[in-house]
Length: 464
Image: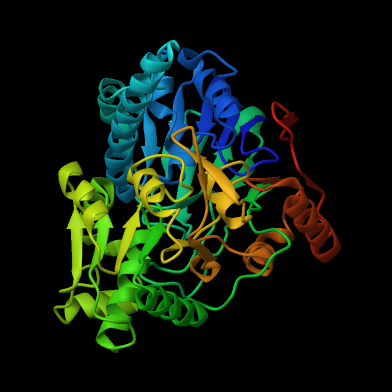
């Protein structure tokens, strides 16, 4: 087997790893890179290989930085199967259509400005038609069910506990009468989080591709997130402002809804309206309801008792753009949760444009923000940022809530890989910024004595 790293190599986003085995070419993920706009445009629009040369894609989960360039792959000639878990297939359908729609609308908005400024028009990476041509290629493969990819290559997936349907993938090659086992962690979740099952322990493997998003860092406990959320809601309401929460439509929105539901029932937050402003988040929440096989025991019991963890009286889900625009005219405190989680696209940009300059308001960042994204600039307390290309002074309060992270932290990653460490020949660290990956690399080598590398873009390795 030959492994080449084309994405999430010494950076967080754009997960894409190429595997050549049994005379065929496969991709592990096909994700969208997020960062500097010009760099992201260049990386996302041009694949480093002919799209038609790819025989199949194995998708670890539906987050856009893992799935977001699949329609572009299809647009450029790919026509093979895309394998993933049933829940991921359902989520990817919703997310890719939404991403295409957002690109079309954002380009439409930008081109009006370009026209007035005498600038050339821009085009989306792909359109809704491209996304619709991608959807029939998805083939659901349940957890733990072996799937034959070619005569001498198969794979099996395990629950990664990161988001609904997320998987860790074990690939088994038997070329040249020799078995080689490659384990791809995907994005690894945490134990005892809201809604979802804990990550499965890893199976034995020879090689491991491991995410390193939180290398060198620890998370706070979940209980601290609930208390912090209550304090932020109360503080913003007391100032008469709006609480604007950029959140990933898959996982983070549902976590926040569950926490706000609990805080409401406990009387710990004031009686203000709460909005989830995103057609995608509405669709995703419906998909959550369809896949209880991914839920933990507590959530299953709540459902069995007739409860709905994703709906309560003060919560309103918004699909239509006309209803979203009405939120701008609200003059009372409220909570608005809206994707995207890194503030790079979608309705959240409009809410930021309307509220960043208001010192009564709070922007609450609830997840990891990749380098050079608008969300990262807000976390780093930039006094001025650009929204839709226009500079804006940041007068709103900016706070963060990192305990909700769906990624395993430094010690959780080390603990998860412990059962498989004794069989490993090499570990490849991906999906992390260089400093964090370097800290995790050092810890793995010191703790387990396993050779660990942080591959660069385009770096190739023979797995024997």
